[in-house]
Length: 403
Image (cartoon, rainbow, N blue to C red; front, top):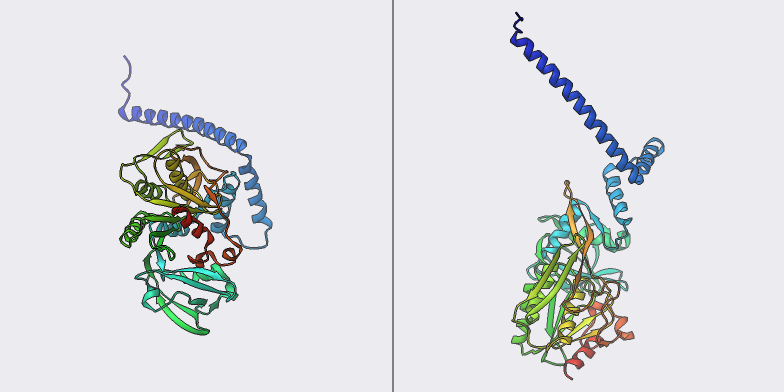
């Protein structure tokens, strides 16, 4: 007759068996994981080399290492090494600023500026409406020579621009050169709506409306439609769209603008590296007008898609658009942003976008219908200070409209 095993003994044996099984499984998976990790590190040998460098630097380097700065630099170095001319890494602060700009607003005093080398100052070329700069009486043509106790000659152009920017609700003191005299103006920074579209009736022909698009952000379609409608109310039935120095912007923004301009048909075809595709189409409504488009070598990306789409529709239908200027930059690839846990982000090229009917123009650019270089006189003037009278590319575009 067999002995009855106590219940507590059964429990103890079961626990011991479970622990033994867990240890065996853990050792197996740990060994498998380490083998996989070692294989991965061997495949990407730069990890091993980087760790070796880091070990030596931390042992022998005489200075102090800022690990956050080092981390950002390593990531930027990796992205610069993949061969993508358009890849970029942004810290969390940089990415937040970028997103605000793409949303059509930013924190500042509300001015557009250029560098004036003759006066060694930052010249204000536009005061944004409902901005701190407008409220404090800043004027177009005012020159900023200092911010607080820092001067332009001391810190440089871009550093001084950074000093003008800041957190909403804070104040910034500007030293302004006006009519040969220096004055001090204090503005309170706040969120202001950026202006990506400016326009006016052409000075030599009241039937021609001039519209400059500096970039494509989320507010550009609304501003563009308002500009066209305002010029139509002023009697304009022909338009010059200036895309010179426009580096592109948001895909959705350019698609919305082209949908407004073009008749029914394709707008763009997106082909991603993953094999996915996107195809955008325009509805039947369109802008029925004679159009000229100004381009140069700094017209890029989404701005090139704009120019090429109008060119395609002119060649494949009854649309009427003429490209005037010089060959564009040649960027027919798109980038995607990927955010990281700490709020930072990076972008890499993930696909190509083709215009409605023609081939992709990446690396080639778009050749205008009428090639016109800036005259020597116009080229000697800051681009943003060109007028209807001395901008020879604009003058030629108007001539084309009136043929």
